[in-house]
Image (cartoon, rainbow, N blue to C red; front, side, top):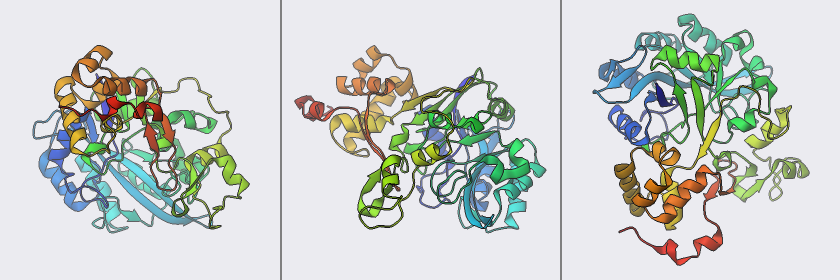
Length: 413
């Protein structure tokens, strides 16, 4: 069965998230986006876990449904491990997958002795990532432990600020059980292919969404049995017949693609950062070294290298951003929301619109410029000002000359 999965999401119990992130709205947004399997997120939080136990019902093996909805939920949670190792402070975010509510309950019981699980949907534990893996795998070998957003400067396994140079350095003897990493918004598989050490690792992509509309901005497309074991095996085996492709942000749009210093509005390519000895040319403070620079540092292959057996990728821009770019407004405005709902009503799910709907059907459902925008994104014909130091990149589909044309002042009536 072919389906889309987004494993890394959060509930309303995580910091800096929408208060609308309850099971009802997660189920609703999964349907709008075209996502079949959705991570529960935050299963370590006691109040959220209680809601999961009360409201989720067993569906296919290891998967759950809410109130008879079409979406399937898989038990996932993100842990923030902050600890000292080899005389350095490490800050690693790790995504956990559990095959059942019972297994998640046992994990919570163990971790509850180590830190305060009530404090945040993404709890901070003074726990070595290796020790976290040991605890989880001792409870169930069917769990998955996945380093989250692996390249962001802070809170990631390869982060420039507090990470490691290899999976083995981080997880030691448990490295053989680490089958996947999450690439994060500021990197994509093509960047990760430059590291031969990751050839045996499956690259997964998820939204890490803090609100419903952000769901599915990155995701995974499978063609396998709809079950926990089917998903786990597809990830573990890295089988391109079962794991078809990942859906990606353009990595330049991520918040940490380039190096930079936000307070001074400084954004630099890696080669330019070196000229300044990784110091801000305005204030002299240390730059935040971004993902592209960090990949360059660890890579042992040239840009553009693709290893044999690599899972393909497709890069997209969220539909609301495409509509906003055409109308010359910002996402979240009433104009954008109205046209977004129009397209969903006429053509189906957002991911289906972005990936599969024909040119003719797009043209009959919306403005020619919006249809053209969707088609250009499929061909990667976009203009991007890369993100840096916590600032999202700015992405445009139409050139400045095209934006000046009168057609762009049209309103949708």
